[in-house]
Amino acid sequence: MITPAFAQAAGSQPAATDMLMQVAPFALILVIMYFLIMRPQQKRARAHADMIKNIRRGDTIVMNGGLIGKVARVVDDGELEMEIAPNVKVRAARSMIAEVRAKGEPVKDSA
Image 1 (cartoon, rainbow, N blue to C red):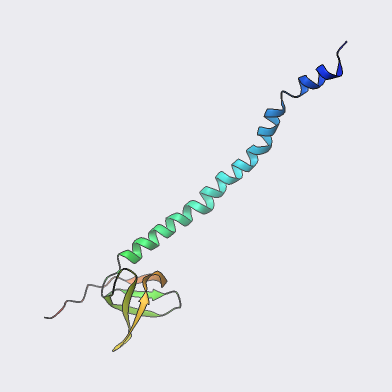
Image 2 (cartoon, rainbow, N blue to C red):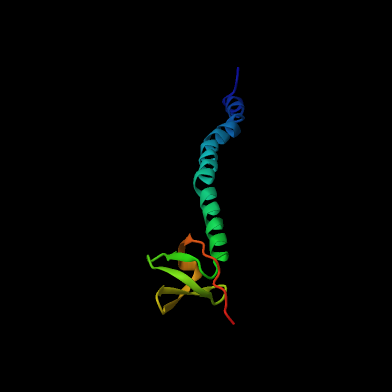
C-alpha cells in the first residue's frame, strides 16, 4: 500500500528539529562560557586600564615583577618614573603595573 519512497519522504521532515536539538547544547555552552569567562575578564581589563590611566605623582605602586615604589613623575602615556629608594629613580612602563597600593597626594612643586 505505501511505497518505500513515500515512507522515506515522510521521515525527512523532523530532521530539521533533530539538527536543532544537536546544535542547542553547543549554543548553551557558548552562552555559559561568555558569562562565566569572557565577561568577567573584560570587566577586569577595563578596571585595570582605568587604574593605570589614573596614576599620578605620589602614588605607591607595585610592578608585575614585584618591585614597589613611589611615582616620582609621569613621563607620558606609556611610561612613568618611580622612586624605589631614596635618590634612586627608574623608568617603568605603565602597562607593567600590577596594582596601586596607596593613593598619595601629589607632590607640590616648590618653584
